[in-house]
Length: 295
DNA sequence: AAAAGTCTCAACCGCAACCAC
DNA sequence: TGTGGTTGCGGTTGAGACTTT
Image 1 (cartoon, rainbow, N blue to C red):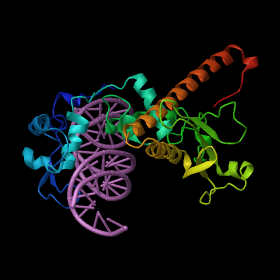
Image 2: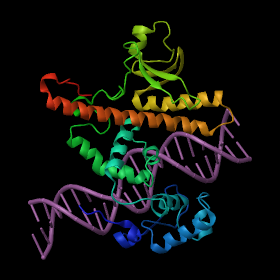
Image 3: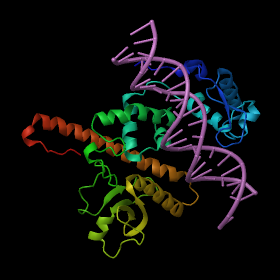
Image 4: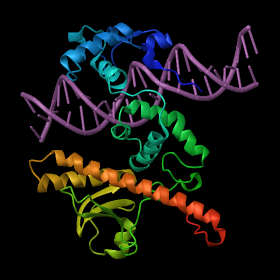
């Protein structure tokens, strides 16, 4: 289907939606305008932000002379008027990145959007809901867990692509090497409750319960979380904590550490995906020696 | 041609995190 | 430490565009 091009005109011109009057959702600001923005409002908002800069959203409408709430102004600027916003067709490589990021991060749209230049969280969320989730379902993949639909019931395990390095002892957790350039430069190990029962008797963290994951640096437990997505956040928290302890006064490194770590995970995913495709080609060529691996 | 159904996406809403005091 | 205001996020809605019957 041909994509519409909202950037060619204001949304109200495009859609003809009637503007309403509302309260911006919190009972305050009665009499404020709601609904689609007009070209005039867009121009007022754009020129004000060009002149005064972003931020102070609550005061902005009054100062700019707009009958909108600050929240609405922020949204309009972030998702539509910002010069850096790239609109229109999402390319195959962007789609691939969204899929891999979603597999790693779940519905953290702003985090995903932050790594795709020019795309907004709203756009990616819409694209996911209207295209990608349906695409995955049609391929027999659960869009929430990224597992085959028949196996999607158990959501509290890492995705099958989460690598367990070949040089680690069996059943002792998932190793996540941290980028050496960051202050968080040790191997982080994620262990499960079962792993603790089998291999770490006596060292079970007091608050750890069945189904939990535990993030380790060596033998010192540092945090516990439930589910794979919790685990990802846990690793970031862990990095942040280490950075603040070991590198006080260098706050930028916190984000750098997570960013580098995320890059390494994305690259691992890409490599893994590439390896899978190569293996499928080899299997197709030599059915007799096919590995049978599907993860 | 028109009615019904589906798709798309801008915008809204509620909530939680963050920050200043 | 508690409180109130602000900001940002993710889920949801709703109306026009488009497709199917």
